Length: 337
Image (cartoon, rainbow, N blue to C red):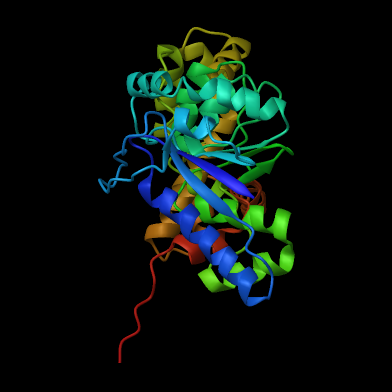
């Protein structure tokens, strides 16, 4: 199976290396099991020049895009890692997409002949630009979502899964471990579960990608231009530990409840009540991360009187219990002799 990996300036350099290292580990696992290696790969840049990723460690491609497309053999799989860093401003996002324009017809042609396309993080912007995500929710790092919504306002985003396999399109969320988990997904799909398990153990990583929900606790929600919603957000945030009367809030803003809900939904993709719940969950996460306050007291600290209700809400939103969240993100207890 031949894999072409597109590299661009400001991509995550460690991610490119992680893909290659994981493919090498998979082939090693197969050989040790008296099986043939499965993967081969090529690194491709648009113009054939070396690129500078975010870590400053230059990556040299094997081919330019034109050289690669002129080869006698073609890739079975195209992988599009991040096109830009997740913290990039929108103007730079647009520039990166312009620089990547030559890959769009390649994506479309590869799709039309049944080839496999894989996007990682902001690589999903390329598949969207090629018109292939019109009916498929895209995955990406949460800090790139507002750029995606601005550039492709009619398209959907999947915020609950780490990997979405749509057959000949696979969309993968961003983050440090996304690249290895993608390879493990490919290994399981094409080489079987046993090989995937053995490779994951060799790399000392979990085979199955975790839910992205626990990592979304600091999602930025003020990156919009609706001043009235911003005022409502500030009111909700300042009084999140209290009982909030949303009818009264609407009157204070000289707007109807229905209009307030509609405007929240448009810019934040949630209702005022859901935003309040989100603020309270964020507050609970911070307390779980930074304090030893018991979970039942945290519930009351964030403004809930019904402990059972909040625990259900927390588990639904974060896809883990409060105790599991603290175990994953809380401060470690240092043992002393």
